[in-house]
Length: 78
Image 1 (tube, rainbow, N blue to C red):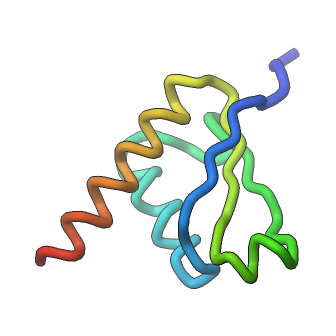
Image 2 (image 1 turned 180 degrees about the vertical axis):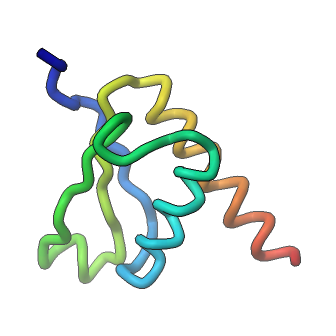
């Protein structure tokens, strides 16, 4: 039995960037259902343009944050 995910990462994105986030993570071998579970938007996070992914391991959570930050910075300058 796999342990439940405990490592929540809040990404500063609106719903339209969720697909991009998942594609970028997958391209770096961070996989949905294997490394993390998606959470559903709630009204408060929707208004704040935030989305949470819940990771099984802390190192994958940190890796995902780093990958997304690098992607956003690269996108700003290209």
